[in-house]
Structures are given as C-alpha cells and as structure tokens.
Amino acid sequence: MTTRYLKTTLLAGAAFAVAAAFPAQGQYAGEAADAGQALDEAGPVNIVADPAGLPAPIDYDEPRRHLVELETTEVVGQLADGTTYTYWTFNDQVPGPMIRVRVGDTVEVRLTNDEDSQMLHNVDFHAVTGPGGGAEATLAAPGETKSFVFQALNPGVYVYHCATPMVAQHIANGMYGLIVVEPEDGLPEVDREFYVMQGEIYTEEDFGTPGHLTESVERLLDEDPEYYVFNGAAGALRDNPLQAEVGDEVRIFFGVGGPNKTSSFHVIGEIFDRMYPFGSVTSEPVTDVQTTTVAPGGATVVDFEVEVPGDYILVDHALSRVERGLAGILQVTGEENPEVFEDLNEE
Image (cartoon, rainbow, N blue to C red; front, side, top):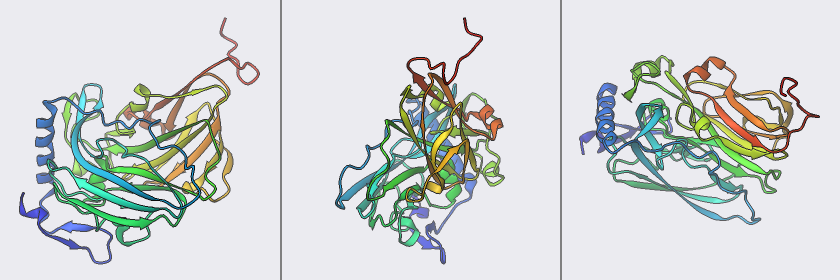
C-alpha cells in the first residue's frame, strides 16, 4: 500500500477527507485502467442494478435499528454492446442498493473498501444529520472497514454517494444510490415499485468505441460526458425492462447521481398522476405532471396507472441524450383498452 492511503486531512469546513499525498489524476486514471485490464480477463461484471430489486414497503409502526453493509469495489462492467469500463461501485452495482427505513429508525452503516481497490472510498448520505453525512467516519483505505450510526430524522427520498476527492470522479464512476426514509404512516400503496437512477460516464474514447474504455478527467471537468446511463449502462433498462400489467399503479423512485447534469425525467405515453417534488414525501404531491426536473444529487417519486398495453420509453427529455445511451422501457402487458387508446391503422 502506498503512502497516499496512510494520512488524511480534513478540508476546513468540508464534509469529507482528502488523501494527504494526493497524486495527479492521471496517475489514478492509469492505475484504474491497469486494474480494469486485469479484471477484464475474467469477463465483465453485470453492474446494472435490477430496477425491481428494491426493499418492500415498511410494514412496522415502532422505530427499529438497521445494519446497512456496503462494500466499495472497482470492477469491470459492460458499459454498452462490445464496450467495458472500470466502474467504482457500492456492492458491485450501479446504482448502489436502495435502502429503506422509517422515520425515527436508527441506522448503522458499515462500509468495507475491498482489499483489491486502488482508491480510498467512503459514503455520504444526504439523509444524515451529522458531519459530512458520514463521509469522514467511513473514509476507508483498501481492506479497511469503517462505520457510524445515525437516526433518520427526516422522511424523504435521498441520494447517497462516495465523497472522497475528487468527489465528482467517484460519482461519475458509479458510486451513488438512494435511501428512502418513509413517513410514520408510510406511502400510498401501489402495485409495483421500481428503482431508477441517472448518471454520466466520461471516457477518453468517443461514444461507441469498442473495447475497454478509460475515464477522462478532462471531460469530467468540462462536464462533457460521452455516455448517459440509467442504472449504470447504456441501454441497461432496454435490456432489463420494467414490467407491469394493465391496471397496475406504478411507482418509480428516481434519482440523479450525476455528477453534473440535471434530468428532465419523462415517460413517453404516460402522465404522472402523483409526483413528489425534490423527494419530499410529506408534502402534497403535484398531480397530472408530464415531465419533472431532478437535479444532480436529487430525487423524486412518481406514481401513475398504466391503462393501455405496450412499451413505454423512459427518457430524459433533453432528448439528444437518448443517442448516448439514455433510454429505458416499461413493458405493460394485458388487454387492449380502445376507450383510452386505439391505433386506427391496425387491421
């Protein structure tokens, strides 16, 4: 282990720690690329978070204590067809696992940085009331485990992310997720829930270049991504579509890891019956919404009923981003509903 892992210093007034012997970003990028090439020999890891793989709604009334175990890993995953990338992840997936608790619950976060990592990692929870959202307490060198405990004081949907400098680099490489803190009375019941987050990938190579791609710190600083992604990879939610049936009430917990771009989240062919701006689940939802704006490090919840079968496309309505990988599909099956929609060209 080199000396850059041995000392840390707190930035004055900041919420995270900095490696004292911080090397040039090019050195980090080179090490990550070398690690990616070595890992690539074993084949890429499926880093795409299952949009249906989220915890069930809270079903208890009294405060509880939870143990949240996160492992930070650096793995080669498939970014697009014929293209791989070295992701930095929580639990080998992008976004990291969705965490679900109730307001008033106590949460112990235990973060382990994989011994094969090249980087320091930590986690900052926007749901935490406390220094750095836990970032200082969880700063871990490869092979270390760090932990802290917090009480979930405020209900809502909150982002968590790695906050090790360069923070934007860690987020862009995949280190973000959501924690849902349900209010005392819970959320309105729905038939199906999904977990979707948007991010950006900054590569030295142009969009569509085959092979193993390397990160570009220059493009990151210029806020000029080559790829836009839902759940970590280009077309991830096209190949792993959301599934529902006619008549279902659907809920999407949607967040933006970023690190830089605001999303204009829209589902083509649907209208959000209820939308919870900024992830505030105790405010009255806004009704009958076409598109909602979600900032980097922000989140929302949208609910809508699906009345007609077919494929509904999830997009950021900055629609040129579709051409760089940002589109998903909600597949709805069931009986046709010509009173709501009928294609007059079909025989």
